[in-house]
Image 1 (cartoon, rainbow, N blue to C red):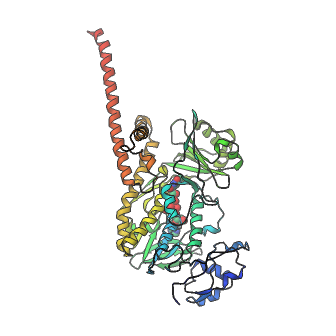
Image 2: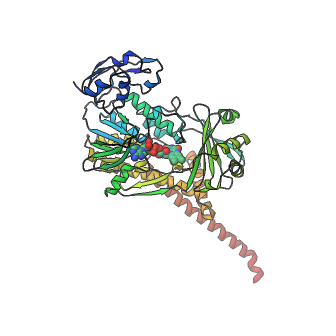
Image 3: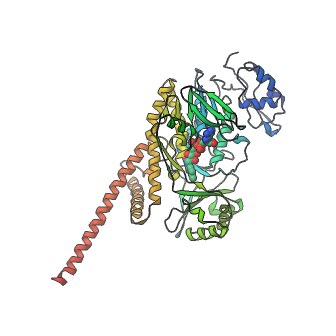
Length: 545
Ligand SMILES: Cc1cc2nc3c(=O)[nH]c(=O)nc-3n(C[C@H](O)[C@H](O)[C@H](O)COP(=O)(O)OP(=O)(O)OC[C@H]3O[C@@H](n4cnc5c(N)ncnc54)[C@H](O)[C@@H]3O)c2cc1C
């Protein structure tokens, strides 16, 4: 039985339909595959378990067979990609059979799984949580993140277009509330706001449908890595230990990565970790609230604190017409708020233009919501060691100030694929190359985000000075770019979301411009002070002579 088999792509939305069990010869191990569950549903469990290399069936690739919706969609008769066979979503003509184990099915892990499946690798994903396609939406992990042009471009390579049904909203612009009223900043870049959990779920379902050769293993928590044996161990939902060997191990298990910890404890890398000095609470608003004001339609609403502190709030519409938002306070500040009345007092004191019904709904929703940390910055000395590579928050978690964490994570998945291709599949040199090229970029993105967080959180005269310089940089950048676009580029903050814009160059430019403006501002202020002193001396001096 060959490992390169062409099959009819039939999508089934009901396990009760015969078509899903007829088929063609197909070589694949079902023992641990997600497919196992589906075929056991059709009565083929024994056949799958005992005749592991030669099973006859026509595959059902719908991950929602359990819904029994009695619909069968016959897909086009294009071939599926199995074990590197040329076909749907596969770039590579030459299957090489190297096995990639990905830890974590967040945006980074699922993106890298699809990228490497496209290149013909055998990919297994192990995720600590349950199968998101079987979870209800709107879990406590839900909060809105912005997917900009970078992230959208990288997702499009995988066939994911945002917004998708039930996943993301392309808002018209941000409606800023201040003491002077509201002002609209249009969403000229086409950014999409999406619930983080919904995005992860959408990506997993897309991968299961379009890349059925990827094996997903849920409820598997990484416990340790033995790099000498190229073996990783997991604890399954019942507390048993499961081991998997790998040719390439991708740690995409988030900011508290167990894979990174394993590399650090064997001395293969060092890393620093810094917590954002902010906490947040997520809230959900009824559709009726959003519909009550035509100004809100398809817009992001933002509120900054009237006293210039980091207390801020934003809300965006969900695809179902409800809205979700986030209230951010200094770290630990939520501890001082117990009752709904405390939230009402805080919101009315800090935010201008918050309508009473909205204020009440947010106060109600926040009272019992859990407090979450406002993000972590993790900086590693390297993203790769031997045959292990870190991607996404596991290798380069950053503060959310510029909304680059998820976008850069999905970009990193594409960058890893490119490095493997450039190294002709030589895994060790590919991951070294990936780290050498990618680490400076993601470190610069983290530095830029940290800079913005620092300016935003600074208080007193120095804080005001930093905020003035930052504001000047943006205003002057816009004016100069308008006056002479061939000489002056738009401000850094307007370029950071652009596909292909180098974070390293943007960071260097921002630091240079801020240093120049700081000196200029000091010189101007000193000049004005000197002039005032001189003028005063002209008038006051004669009185004492
Ligand atoms: C308040 C806030 C706002 C943000 N806003 C934005 C934004 O606007 N734009 C943006 O681009 N980014 C934003 N981010 C950052 C973004 O959420 C992350 O960068 C992104 O989720 C990273 O994806 P990831 O796949 O690397 O990690 P994660 O999303 O953390 O996924 C890691 C996965 O690994 C699994 N896992 C963890 N440990 C194990 C283990 N031991 N074994 C097996 N599996 C494991 C987890 O269950 C999870 O599914 C924001 C972050 C915060 C906190």
